[in-house]
Length: 529
Ligand SMILES: NC(=O)C1=CN([C@@H]2O[C@H](COP(=O)(O)OP(=O)(O)OC[C@H]3O[C@@H](n4cnc5c(N)ncnc54)[C@H](O)[C@@H]3O)[C@@H](O)[C@H]2O)[C@@H](O)CC1
Ligand SMILES: Nc1ncnc2c1ncn2[C@@H]1O[C@H](COP(=O)(O)OP(=O)(O)O)[C@@H](O)[C@H]1O
Ligand SMILES: [K+]
Image (cartoon, rainbow, N blue to C red; front, side, top):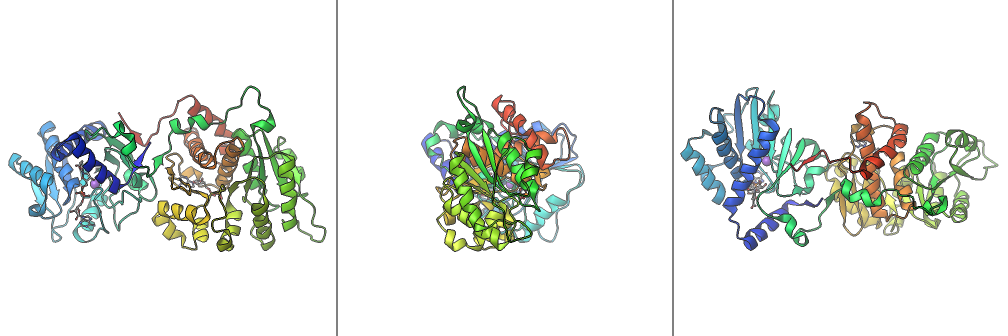
């Protein structure tokens, strides 16, 4: 499902208004009335004491004025007040017209001044029409006061019109302050910034309302600025074993993960690779771990790396890289996953770099392997074409030589920067995982929940993506399909149990695959009814 930026939405509307000759007044009317219809589906079964429609200085405020009028028509006994933040004399065109209509109808309008701050009594339905896609700078002064008052309202429901005010609808940034809505009814198309963190948390449930423009009639003119991953999109790329397939033709994965202190990382990665359809999983393991591998996952084939004769504790050494490259060829591996639980010693860093440099196949670079790349980032610039990097914000910060908090502020921009720098596919993990290609394709994942914040869940993701790669999917498609399935597994599991372990995730994965295959899953965040 296509996502759109604020700039493109405004341009597109202008263009379609011209080509279809739909007056903008009609669009605002459609927007307001269709939003009222959605509001009726969402929140009118409760008997609200009053409705507060908070209107700002632009067209988003104009939508609010139309909403107030239609609510007033449908619920004549419900007290409705319009709170206007801004000077009514400076309202323009359609907003000015709707302001006048509301005045003439006699809907109470209260102008908001800094000296008489807003407060909402419990039981208020609040419609946030302060800012939409036209927000152009950080929210300050009276607007900040209004947003704080909305967020402090008790026993109320907050419904944001188009976007929660204070959100940058292109990048998903919080512009100083933002309304924390229970529902967001977005107009025409889903704005890209709504579905990524940190903004996603401010949107509540996202609904789509139409404004009377046939956006989908001319898909060619809607720019490619990102898409939301959907079950329909990933369905053709799910694991599928052909009638004549054998374990090699299905796909062989090489896993380079785990160490004596972090065995679980390797086990989870291997398990996830099998559960997502790989024909054979090879684990490059060390002599100390080999017996454990056999008992934990009997299906795993191990390539036992040579013993370190002179050292008490086994560790990864650069010459092990040659052994792995040899095994990749011998075993006909089609992808590699490297990183989880490898440790951060200098010898493991050299080893990791050597594997990535010499490996005959490409794949997923995660965890300790990301940190090894980060230490030598200038060397790796532009050299990771075809590889998939799966950092969380901390790892991404190290890779870009920036703080994790600056990554968190604008996750899409950071992901694009990483893909550009290393020429790689980027998977920035976290709520609303982002997948970006060096060509600028941007995919946002709607699945997943905070139960995934558990040790080892990233290792499972690495195994899934590497497995899909081995099954012949392209790197971008493997990443997109992998993050969706990983998050969906957690969402489905949550219905059965509030606690998720990474090993549950690996075991439950086939169920998520089945649910998508059988078209049994609908995205919960978008209500198209
Ligand atoms: N363009 C169209 O044809 C349609 C637009 N619609 C609505 O129009 C909205 C976009 O309208 P606008 O472009 O007028 O934008 P907004 O209504 O989001 O706000 C823009 C206004 O706010 C001011 N402003 C921006 N950031 C500010 C800040 N931080 N502090 C103080 N003032 C600030 C601007 O100077 C401008 O006056 C959409 O979100 C949607 O709700 C709908 O009515 C449907 C049709
Ligand atoms: N709050 C959250 N909401 C959704 N997904 C989350 C959340 N927290 C973590 N995740 C997901 O869980 C996984 C965690 O991976 P990672 O940080 O590498 O953990 P680990 O190294 O312990 O395996 C990622 O796929 C991430 O997207
Ligand atoms: K708004």
